[in-house]
Length: 185
Image 1: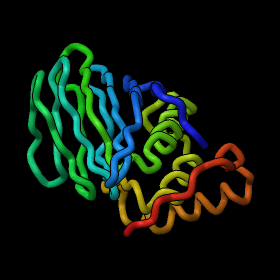
Image 2 (image 1 turned 180 degrees about the vertical axis):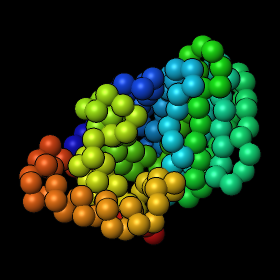
Image 3 (image 1 turned 30 degrees about the vertical axis):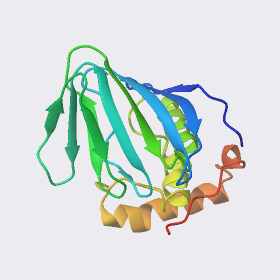
Image 4 (image 1 turned 90 degrees about the horizontal axis):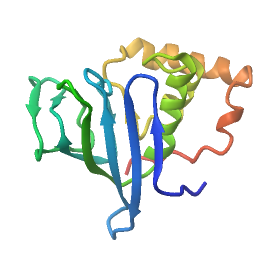
């Protein structure tokens, strides 16, 4: 499935993400991104298992945290780098829309994955994505993305069981063209 850039996705909880351009580089494609985040909003603690992510604040104030460390804050012009495999989160710490530009490298399946997560959030109208879609995404792409704050029992028992039930019920037809997960090297 070929993506045409720029591509804009939005969720119902105040996040808009623009995938601007894919740059082919010898050591992996770099995806240029721009985000707009409403005050108090931002993604939950998450891990890109195979990707580095960089954000530069264009406008506003960003709050960010690496798991196990205190929250930090930065303003316009600051760049934050989240290394692959490191759980992190960020949010809009200001009172106006936070605007950042940055990149994700290598791109792998991030466009499909985040587009699907946003669509699943929009299905429920909340920050919590639709249950079967979540089970599919976090099972199928477990080698690429993780939510470290989900309890072990839920990850190892509840999500796989939900995925299996969803498969039996035919809940994943809309994922028939989903790209294969990238395996850890």
